[in-house]
Length: 378
Image (cartoon, rainbow, N blue to C red):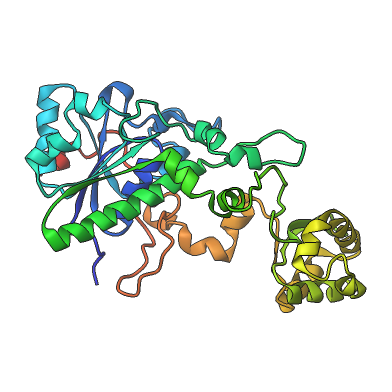
């Protein structure tokens, strides 16, 4: 079966990560995704967000490559009538718009939902904002990590709050927008009516607090920094250093796993100890428990210990670098095939029985690369 969205055309009026990653999602599933770029800024700002080792002449940075594979690029100054007219003609022949404007900007540029609906009543307009459709504040991932409580929980006890090393809020908001657009598409198929859907970075962050939010809302516990530990389970997130100076993280969630762990580490008496024989008392006494587990782990080699844990079905994993993870077999299906010119990762991790998984995509476009091809559409 051909890609599920090979009959869709998507207009991307978005920059940086959240909106563009939604665009790549549709590209991976077969849609034609046209990225509208500002000629005054030489396109998406992330084209210039380069590491020191990257060449300055190339318009495709590693960051830009994270969310722009499979797209076509055209430069349009939509503040000018001529280029706005081109965009309107494209919108008339498209199915979905992905936009990321702060409140009021889309209206000023005449690319808000009301304006484009007049051109194409069936259009689905997906919008990402920082704090909601009526709030003029610009949304920045790092700021919202701070404001939403994520940073207050991230770090070692008594240590500094730490921003997560990926733009996680952008990524979470992108997933919420994908879901909203897909719901709008189902509604279109049922009713033949287009619609607007919107997602804010802040509300996406709040929705993703999950059990940490309900720990506060239900139990009155305001989460703080615990390193890698879990507030509700122990020993879960505990890091053990082995004799060869490698690190293993364990995630013991039930009593039977804890019993097996104690037996494997040659401390079976620990399981019967009244301080550790249930999860609730292990949580209460996690500090002394962790000290005991860490001390015993020092007498084992990492490969031996992780192998024994996996054989005993004790949840455990080696702490790996990003390079280690990407070189491993578990990540191989997520990496786009460089032999066929692709760059970077797939954004969609799902497997669909009705279509093949994408192994390659056209590489991220150079700035304004597809102007002639796109103009031919209109």
